[in-house]
Length: 252
Image (cartoon, rainbow, N blue to C red; front, side, top):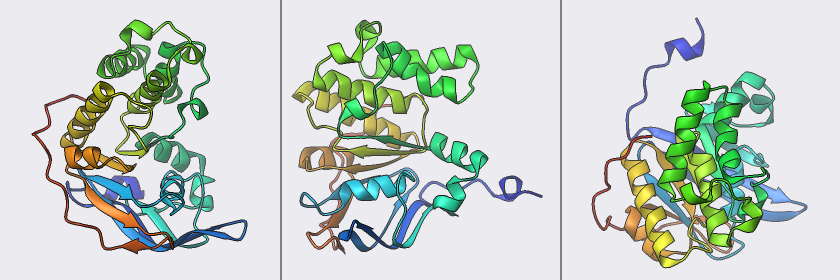
């Protein structure tokens, strides 16, 4: 019997992503050095620290876009490395369950219109047309992009493109959402919209790992903080910030 048929349904609060003594070197330069931390189901984790400490590298490792020089990264108990991701079935399931939004949205946007961008992921997942359409419409609505659906992404402002990139990943409803500086380039109202969405996403049982310098976002999410220092080590974080208000109900 396959592993998939024998695994019990995981409980909320169980570890989903785990870094175990992870180091990563890039062309002789240390980006992470023995980092250990985890993200549990149904929680938000803020990855904080000075510029150049390895926060974005950690996201790339979590997304399977790079692999540790030493140590292990596991997702839902499975080791994420080059050998695992070389298996087509495993890689497809993994990339459906883990979504990454880069700090620069232009890295992710390539379709002629906003609607096509947001629908691309669900269509690649092989969902029925009506389900792909529903997910696209829901994601456009969540980020207030309905009026921009027919616009080309390059015609939008930086903040609007950021929200399109978020909508693209959210349309696939990943269990783990990885965000690199999610409020960068957003105005105050858009920051509040993103924070409200992320609170609801976590309240619905999903997990979020976000790099951020935005203390108000950490507070709004009630995020548990994992801090990296300038030597690329995980150091003891301050006490978690309480959420500012309960998350509204939302369907994903």
